[in-house]
Image 1 (cartoon, rainbow, N blue to C red):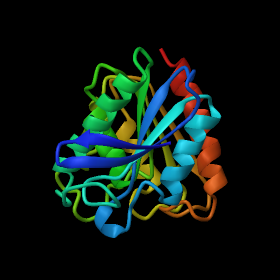
Image 2: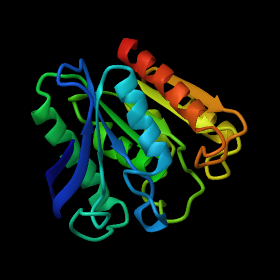
Image 3: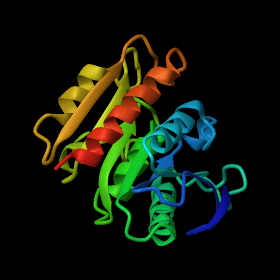
Length: 213
């Protein structure tokens, strides 16, 4: 179902999927807007598909300046606010449900910034965490993931040049709350070599997040 959300810069174009009786709901944040990222990017679509496959309601949305969303790219600051607005909309649309904050690449960082401190968010699902990508200097501090005081599941591509698995695994060490780390072997950053593998690991991560203490 196509929806329009009230974002900080105006309308945010969204797509809500899943049954009305879903036991949980999640936002999905897409990759970098200036690099072609939209809510229809393959990896973002697969994250949403995994949420729905596990019984949840998934809200994908376009950041400001993408598709029918108003505004212009704001180097991550405004996009984090867009993600916060999406979480608030979803909480109002599905009151009382536990929420997950999910995202891919640039969207993974936005999911952390928006959901890390939000008391309505029960956990985070991050895919393709990018620590070597340009333009994310203000957001890609790996300590941000370590300091999130709620369960975080990460799915990384085995050949991810922007987020080598060993670097992401090291970034999770000493975290304040439970962490789950999975790798999709043979895939590069966009997971195009094994999108079913991304979805499979995302579904397992959702099951873990739903059962995590």
